[in-house]
Length: 285
Length: 285
Ligand SMILES: Nc1ncnc2c1ncn2[C@@H]1O[C@H](COP(=O)(O)OP(=O)(O)OP(=O)(O)O)[C@@H](O)[C@H]1O
Ligand SMILES: [Mg+2]
Image 1 (cartoon, each protein chain N blue to C red):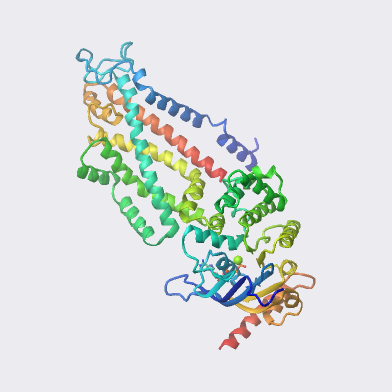
Image 2: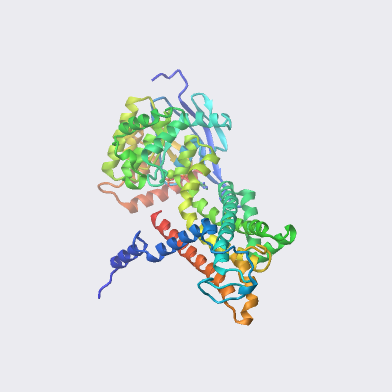
């Protein structure tokens, strides 16, 4: 068998090509289904996710309860389905907030350097040296626990990371002569940044942000697990894991496994999509 | 030419130094440079790499500031025009620029047509519906077809991109067009086409050119007068024909001798360059 560089390149191209990337498209399809489930959750759930049934505590999967029930006899499938909403909306809002803040700071830092740049560098230094969770717990300690605070706290923790990444892309983007061409044309700085430079950076940013979504989902689930995020009777997945763990010693793995697998599956799919997107966009630029 | 009226562009004693590193001596890029450009005239800037050509071009285009000296276009000081959007646009209509890199100087996200209509709309030169017609006219002027209007930069050749860049500059209807090595990245036959195009544009309108190039043959063809720069300072100036055929200054002679041709010897050029440098440092001490 002979292989040369061209063959390898063609093969590679095939992998990143549109149709021949089953892993990517499977992940996209899976995430699409998850989003649909979140949208139509109330219609899909066979039971009220908060309906307690002491007659069916820790029941095994059956026709009545396809995934079994938890320590309060609540239907796990219904809780999983309804939990999709809070588990996805949280990281989404967190990402939107962190992106708006981070991209703005990153571009301003790249554009006119000086003190904003120095300040950003210091903040990110501190953020990187400081365990992220500790910072978030600090914010929660000040503002009180709850899903909203958890989202805000994580958004504040992610913003400098996004800002740093944006800054590095923006620096090379701003060095391109088309930016000078817009300046010569008389376009104002803010317009050049928002209307032309940011859209040109989106391909490079997109994959990174998608991966961050997965991280945000995990971060929020962790906070809920620790009791800082979503509060009972919510069926947020992290909280479900925490509530279900009492059953582990008694041999009831379902209540932790079901939400745990859901978190893992979504995060893995999101990572695959994010990394592939970054690769494709990189290849196109 | 009417010599009693003030020329369109009057640069007087321009100076620009760059502070590269803290504690290091600043690099003097432009050293007391004065010149004028009449309406409809083409002024050439020649000199070796690092002699300050681009810096002068960028000062005229408003991309770089001068530390001292004055620069007037149509009697208006470029520096005192003010900061608002109206002032920016007024400055843009005085001077437009075409950059060396035809790959980087166009916004890769926009089609050719969008590039032109954005510029025209910005300057209110084509109200809404007319912009497309205006773009079509401009494309015709730079000899690009209507089908090419819908293409994006990556779908065009280097020469075609440079035509788009020229059309974009003309869209603003400037009094002065600055071309910084605008044909240097193109092969000889494409160069010839672009030069022909510039010639035609000059015959149609009384646009003035500041033409920067290290290629003396091209400068000879395009420009009426020329400045020879060395180390940021003007060492010789005059009508292009005279300067290139009867160079008065030893540096100009060296530049001309440096052009590869029959009997050209790189070692000889390097030796003469060193001798020239030496004679200069003797003169200054
Ligand atoms: N932004 C900058 N920061 C620091 N130094 C600069 C900057 N721009 C130009 N210089 C310096 O100023 C000098 C003149 O540069 P300039 O780009 O004007 O030369 P040039 O004649 O256009 O050269 P080339 O033919 O290579 O394009 C060089 O020594 C260069 O290093
Ligand atoms: Mg240059």
